[in-house]
Picture 1 (cartoon, rainbow, N blue to C red):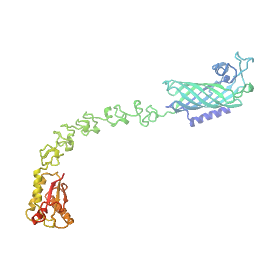
Picture 2 (picture 1 turned 135 degrees about the horizontal axis):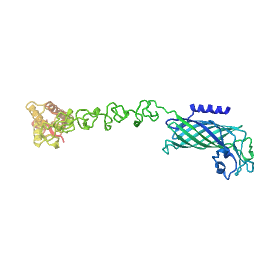
Picture 3 (picture 1 turned 180 degrees about the vertical axis):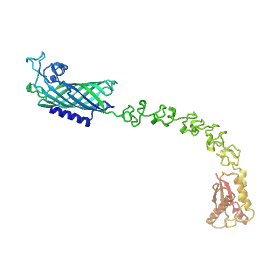
Picture 4 (picture 1 turned 90 degrees about the vertical axis):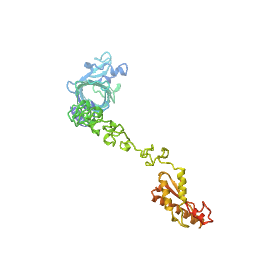
Length: 480
């Protein structure tokens, strides 16, 4: 009994520390019952290896050793993917030991002889990896399995290690209680050889161990008490419904709270559980006009004139117009067919080809030429002569105002008095002073460019005072 106590203590430690598998909902399992040891597989004889090991496997009356009490305890824990790992402790008494002794008194027709070696005590500690086929066959009652493991067996005064392939079948009466049947072939390391046989003190026989008992699963946790285990409960801290994996549906609209954007107000599924007061298909929480039906693209607000601008933002709600103009139609102030938004000259009519601005006419250019040439300068200076120069400048500005998007070049010229360098600088200054005069009269500076030509392009002879006066001039040309 000393060894039995060791086995039971080890099994109880495994309950607290080891990991073994049975079921993913209730990962822990404990089973106990009776076991039977059949030593025939370790005897010699038979026609071949299979015949020796597996013939007459259920000759219980003749070969099996069974204690009429609880003789095994097993603890296991689920480790995933239908696998479990467990530890089993077992005890038995060997009073039926099978040997192959042809011709011996009491041997059967096949030469097998059963003897009592002296009621040897049998203790086993075995670790097992078990694979369940229950999920594969989609059953909730029938649980077939295969296993592999190893252990250590105390057989009388002998002890030896074993390799344990096996099979089992569990029939579940309920979710937590079942009947467990199993068998293992325990291949001993250190099998006896024929010359070592000592019937009185059997050494290390390979053998079968069969067991039958009750199994209990436990360890499943249901924190919120909704009948769904925490591992399967998407909301383990809050009681919920089975159809929602344990998550609640507070407003009862058939949409679980975690997917319901309005968990306290019932609403249709297509609006993610949110109400729609005006029935326009836009949830109230997203509807800028929840009491007036409107299209989704306008956040549920009406658009009376159908211009794509909601009435609340439309400055002309009954007349269609673009959003860029507040829902009002674009004006065409000068009536030239080019809308003001595209018209670079919105108050002066002009063709679309010139962006709504009038094109500079030949007549205007000729007039500019006449007026510009009549603007005379003092000799050697960038100052205007007295007389009608201001009137000429006013006339030039008025012509330019008719073409607000046209670009013009102001050219400065001199007579031949002075050096080339001096005259170049003087011509540039004269062009600049004319530009300043145009800017003062309302012409945009960006429409005017200046350039000086010095004395290089006279229009009259520089041999007379009158000719020189005409060469001291400016020209105003349309810039290409």
